[in-house]
Length: 356
Ligand code: HEM
Image 1 (cartoon, rainbow, N blue to C red):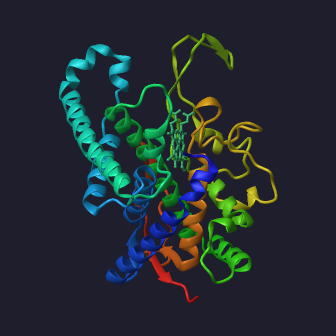
Image 2 (tube, protein in one colour; image 1 turned 45 degrees about the horizontal axis):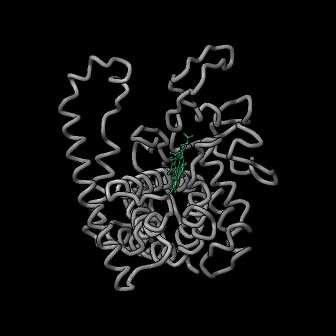
Image 3 (tube, rainbow, N blue to C red; image 1 turned 30 degrees about the vertical axis):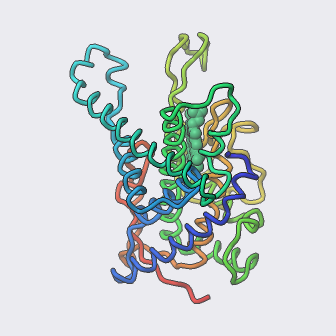
């Protein structure tokens, strides 16, 4: 599902969602003197897109809202770290366990009705082929997945692919709104390579400055500062420390991306540092930044995420001019942790349509 030919087959869905997003932004800005709250606009768009890829059809507004609510509730569940370290504290978390069970029941109900709708649409031929669910239903594993397994897998696809990409896009657009010269340089590149027609997916590989902006955003603002927790299968020594078997290890990737020994002026946003350089973000050739992890558990959505980031940024900058909503003010880059590390003060920007 996350291999390039499958990703490319969803081009019509991306065009639909991006066109809708731009209309939504223009509408919202016309109601409020040009100012928009970027996060909610982009988040709706990313849910529309990933849900289409997951189920093979455009969800009703009501179903989409229900999924967004469930994902929000999952992301806001308190961490279980305290109970992992001090199991006796479990007695204080019984209410939480009940809330988790209720949430799971709601998740199963909502996703199951979408799985049923998928099957009905397949029977009537009103579905886009190649969805994630279709792939799961036709996987030859010897034993078909139960409905609950399908719910878990579809939900993992949505949770993993939406907020990570949305958070990164918010940081990227914040950086571009904050620095008119970087935004201008990107626009010049797009004009020179693409001209006046909308940027297409096949243009992306010819836009090195755009790619550099995406890398620089992932270096300075990786959505996960610690990746997902990993477990040690055998006792080993790392950097002189004994790590016992089964220990949980977190990788502090934010410290890698901001390490002054590897990066000049690491806290500054300078996409140029990636120009005219072969650079690998998978940890195969270097490990100075690992926004997607590395090795066996590397993010399987890396290719899809990179395409979404590049395409959305290019189209948004091509169509609209982005500036901080208070004239002359800088954007506030403080962070807060909500599963991903987001902007503490969600990005508010002034957008104006460009004359093209
Ligand atoms: C900017 C966007 C994204 C970033 C930075 C990102 C980053 C990551 C990271 C750091 C991990 C954990 C790796 C580890 O701990 O070793 C991960 C796992 C995962 N990602 Fe992504 N991701 C992004 C987008 C996506 C997308 C678009 C999808 C698919 C729709 C996706 C699907 C997954 C899945 C399924 C896992 C779990 C893999 C496993 O359990 O082994 N991700 N991602």
